[in-house]
Length: 510
Image (cartoon, one colour):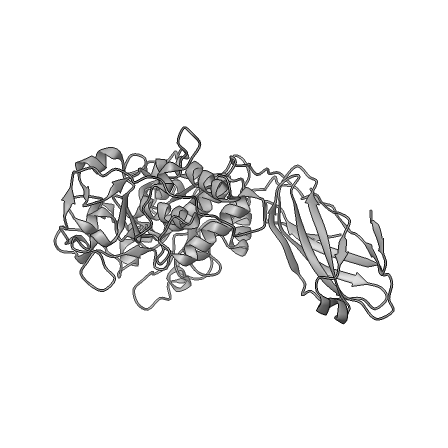
């Protein structure tokens, strides 16, 4: 049904978007005073880092899947191959976050000879683009084909996939992929652990003292250091969206772009860190309290990653606000895994030095002092199958997604002259409010066309993205500008739009 609005020089017919879907987004606790987005991002980061993981892990409390566990899921008959005689119903969705030439096996520098059978690539660049809308649309459509609602991220050596995992996991906790949210984890040691020969330029074995990343014995101590008094909340205002998943997505996307490279090397070279210049940094140890007590980098404070984004009993984010950001911040764990997850969340929240993004210690504590931390061992090297080319390879999935259609409607427009120059040029602005009246989430909502009478044309480039996600009862406003010919006092418009559902199906409107 259409609505007609008459103004002094305008009559616009609103349009209806009819569709229907299966998803709800959560609302976060109230953000701190003066901030509209900090609490949302922190709560979703905290929820993800404390999510229960059902797969075996190497160190208690960390979240990654062993390569042997993944192989057992993909190779059900244990014949060493992955193919049509294996059962796809227990297969997770494997996402390769390396560069395209590593995925295809066309890299000439020894950084990737192919990919895990069935793994899909990030469609734009690497881990840094994992939560771009186009990639999320692709991931949703692929996840819908997997009965086992698990996502496993894989990079070169099991480190940068944790950056992608944190961003993807936090928005999942906010409801981006529906409820129950999928399990999201990373492959321990990445493609290096899956097929060590396939990553010849990545560390392939460890004997302490023979590999340059595991030769340092920089200073350690057991003296505890108390956190300083909490500082002020950073003000986060990255988006006009009120959707928890979109607020978190935008912040994590900006964080991934800012942390490039996302790590700092131990060493004496330019831009590296060692036991003589460590005092120039704020060092945060996100390991367990027991690990910290057994030995930590000199001067480091301890906030276990499961507590980093948590609230205190009074409802404040004291741990976050107690990180000294007057100096560049370095985060470390036993490996580089959980510290990388923390790096994304901290940068997303603005818990960082004004002149430098937070970084993780490259290869974790073992690269600082090889008698501590977690190293890649020869026992973890495997020769599991890989495939080359631009296609995932492996099994073909055909599970049906039980999503539904989004149900959207457009409210009465608000028309106005935005500026004097617009008035002089006859360029009228019209705000359209689009609402989700259904019981499930709409994605990738856009206005794609506007057909007008009386010579009126649209000045705004179309398609125009209205929102990347809209939960039930949610709404968003989109502004179109129209060129109004001299003497025209009214006109009609017929609008068209598009959206996608949780299964990745596209819907055109009307």
